[in-house]
Image (cartoon, rainbow, N blue to C red):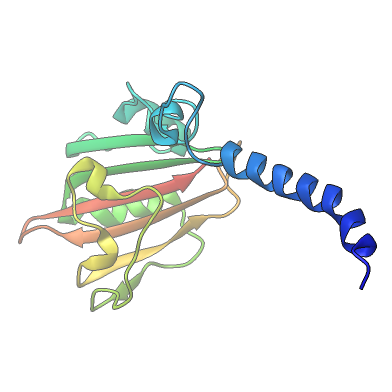
Length: 176
């Protein structure tokens, strides 16, 4: 039995192994200085924008914060392709419908009686603001405001959850 056929494949096999080793080393999650990928990419990929304010997020969402709003919070997630924007505030319940009407939603808000049973994992979680996810609350009125919206805003959704007998929390989530 001749070893000739096997020996002609050895250089190709060695080259393939070397290429595979290079790919594995390049994707290993460490730079030459040993910095883990998570540390290396901080601030370079997707991240929460420092200094985002209720006013700046409201402006991007094309929303006017009502004068009666309290506990207003907002955040801006800068993504690779799109940015996520979240804003929430508390309003007297009797002023919620007026606020929602000025948003001009595509359809009337629907009432969801029960929390969603599936695990929701939004890319811009309200937990970043210290708030519960509206998807995990019962008796939430929700709906699409626009898609597409004006300027660079791709879509905007609203959810309203009652806080107590007199107030409700308005949740706004958009993608820019």
